[in-house]
Image 1 (cartoon, rainbow over the protein chains, first blue to last red):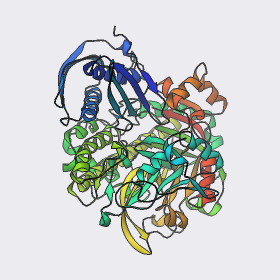
Image 2 (spheres, rainbow over the protein chains, first blue to last red):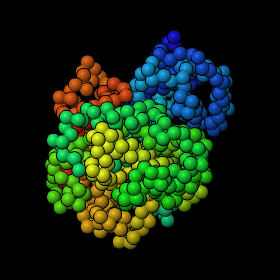
Image 3 (cartoon, helix red, strand yellow):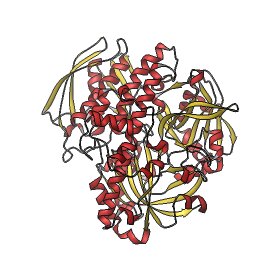
Image 4 (spheres, rainbow over the protein chains, first blue to last red):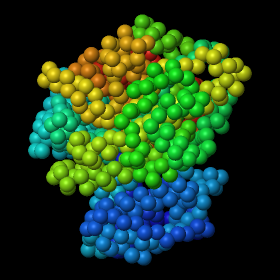
Length: 143
Length: 484
């Protein structure tokens, strides 16, 4: 059983967004991914029978781009492999590269109740900021 | 109050202007009356209209239709035309992820009284026969890469060749259901992969198939030309280019991030990333976007065939006997090269319609022969509890809005607010009391799409009519709905 991630849902008329904070950048990336899947399904309904190590590349020195590419990669896995993801362990995050172990299980319509379809993570009002206590992220998804 | 709202000036009962300020190249213009403006003021859509006015080569004004609401980058309900000869840009964010999301309307020979008691059976049959919901797939089997490329090039023509519909359907589809600038070599492998098993599927969110009755006629002559009669049953299908289109948008936003720095473009929002139309990046996006637009037309064409079969089987009658026939298919997320008059001269412009519908007037060569004397049908779906409208394009739209008008009711509640408003309520039952039988894959979809989440479509259509940018022809009332 996966613990539900902690994040705030951003009020947006057409779409849906999340605001979150994490102690470091790696965990901010992990939490952004977890909250995206939690918006689509209840994260605690997703098991862990499927796992894969992935590598995502973005533009060097462009953190916003890297976050969008990371979330896009996870949506691509969901749609083409029909796998729901619940756990994200970022092993490396530097120079426009994310390497992570992602865990989940194949989508089963009988067990996994759909909350909302997310088409993409957008750059609109996207922020990734370092604060005194760690990092905050705001991202709006197209639904 | 947001930044640009301070300076907004009222030009007439239904037209508001955001004067040029800062980096805006043209003013913004919003179509709304007092009631709709009150809703618009509550969110950030006005700033988004102003942001779009910053785009290189934008012509006239950054426009917003009365169903405008806060989107990402462009507002939903936004129209922007740029002049490629003057460095005008094309922006994937001005089209959106669901490229050629659109709606088609099918007329029937059926009367309300004949099928009223069989609506639940019809809805259940549609729900069974048209794959819907998140990541829905498998309507016609998984296509090979080569077949998918044929879809991307052929659009509705491909679907008709494969036995999904007739040639007459092509005449009644915007652009004949096929943008000819499509080039699948400009589409990445990921879009191909996502698109292979989704042709003929509805998807989720605000997509739907709806059985309606025509309950009011405003313009008898035009309604007759559109084969609409009071009490007649019609079917609406609303969907787009599914994962294929989302991926094309995603891939080209990435390309445009690079183009923005390469061509020295400054933007107030990264989601507006763009490139001049006349650059390799601009041309590549146009060719790839056209593939996704064609995919969407093929998708709606296949779904229409599935829905027709579903009706025939359930009502034990042939499709011919039921008189199932496509009235028209419009896209509402698209960028197209069209000829419009600028300073008295016909000029090729790149018209972005993001949640807006083309609305060409009578006599325009792009309106099919059968409707040329009255004008292009404009389909305006409302929410599932009230009404939808069939309108027709006007000369004023051609002059003022690059031949564009609204695309729906427009959201007013955020999804989470809608969810809260729906808590503890049985929406299926509420809708059933209103005479609407609904089936949806998820309760949350139903909650988010409930009537309270939308503006009143009658108000929206009323503003278009008073502003002259579309004319009402007929009103539809839903009887049965399937939602993803």
